[in-house]
Length: 383
Ligand code: PLP
Image (cartoon, rainbow, N blue to C red; front, side, top):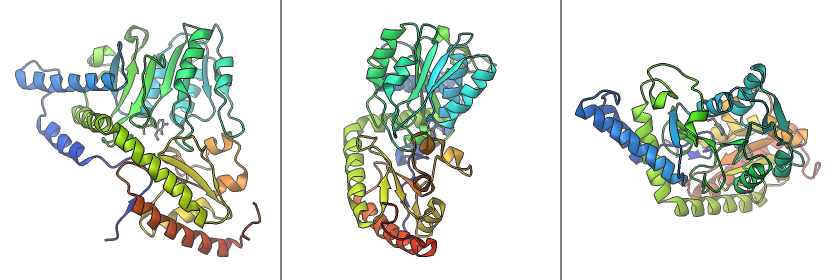
């Protein structure tokens, strides 16, 4: 079988080998963590050690973490019940659909939602702060945008939002940044933070929500009272242990992985010069694991499948909204129609190699040139 080149790590990541071993061990230790005999207490103890591992990984001095089914559930819990009963949530129009849809639900529940629009290909964080007033119960923004890789300065935002309204809660969607950028929830004054296991080489179906002040949060799921009554249901022990292993390995290799991602992106961006009429839609100072590029005159889905036929996997938009028309993020950051129609997202992980980039660029160049013959694109036409 041909070797695959997987450049869709913002959609999901391959679990670490050690994670798969941990999954097997955890599945074999099948006792219910709520039971009171020793074997079950041991399961519960291991689960609590993952909780602490997570809190340490974001330098939390107080608060707790709820284990959830993933980024989407964490975000929904934060936005729907993190500031329950209060008015006015501020967010932006280039958030993940989990945020956009949860805010739509919050709005139909009577919350007032204020959306800050991205312009000139960026979110102006000053405008997020400007939107905060004495009635703002919560501000929610992503740390790293999943489609173009923009990084928002969580520290500056935290300081400025707190200064403007010390009561405003801050929720950060850190699904794309956790384990790639350092996060200190104390310095960034974060009250709630969502992360997802499958983006950090754990497995699907596990996520977490950091909660600074559990008294302020209302549960979204009711039942047996697990997770301090804030998220009922027998814990996903296998997922939690997988998450713990991924955090342990991610934290241990943090600098090495960050350096690798930096080199991968720089090499990819440099090698793109082999291909005419492309636009890099990601900011130069964006996250190192995401590079969004338009190849003018080349419909993105045709190019995606052409690459797929050569064993190279990329994305033409957010995986969670695959199949839907267009990308609200690329629209929000004002890309031209032809740039949006030809945009592909390449996303890397520390498990990728530089040699894969050279192989992918050679295939990419060939595919782009081939497709342009069919679309009758004249090089330089839209430059
Ligand atoms: N937020 C961002 C920025 C994401 O990239 C994603 C997934 O693509 C999510 C939230 C949703 O996470 P999950 O797939 O774990 O529900």
